[in-house]
Image 1 (cartoon, helix red, strand yellow):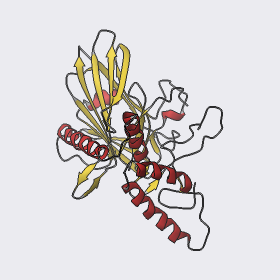
Image 2: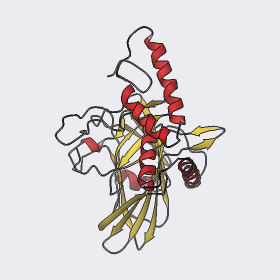
Image 3: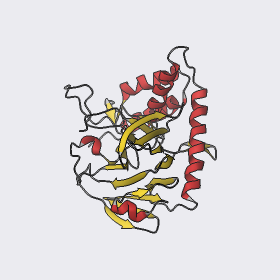
Image 4: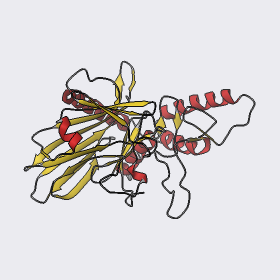
Length: 318
């Protein structure tokens, strides 16, 4: 497991990802919160050339990094600066916004990179994994995308950057904005750059609108809003389940031994998440959770309720 757990989180209540302070994806599960992680280096100690389970953009001559969320959103910005003053900006988000009267939350992760100073030279290293890092996905090369097969799952990585540079992990000069999108094996039917820009604007608007409706106390407003967004990302909107955390095998506290898979729905613990959001006026998560509980109760028939269920309400946990 990596030593530094200061991680940023992005998500859309369907999928989520954790990103370290240098902009490296160390954890991302597809096609849902409890899925097989495409990126799982969070749980690995190896940092060798053969390591897998991550996605990173390395800046040649790296000197420092800064990271922050866009105000009142789940959009993460990382700025990397080199020794010679060259710098790049990296934006990461999962699209989420209102469309056709419902929440649009595709199985999709988007990364946008752009130069902001100097002569930036970058190297993209994309190394997905399967079976929690045990397998290397089978790769197919398309015209502007890579297709990965891991077990029954198939993912598409689309980009407007040189595909050979990605495949060869070759250093290139970043002359303008480049975009990456990882998600379901669906073709992109418009310019990837324009699609990402549109999704970015809509996602920013969604989160700004959502936080604007919260009943925020006078003190610690920024911290409360950030906590509310994080709790919101722990909900799986398709069924209404609320997971205890977005990770597995990370100790609850140092040397505690409590390093379970937290991507399940503990009925009691989820109540406290719902209660916290309700106190801020975010009641829709409660409505979805009540629907989830109703389905769990109906499926249980006369059997006693379990303390924990899968996010689809399944009683058998494996």
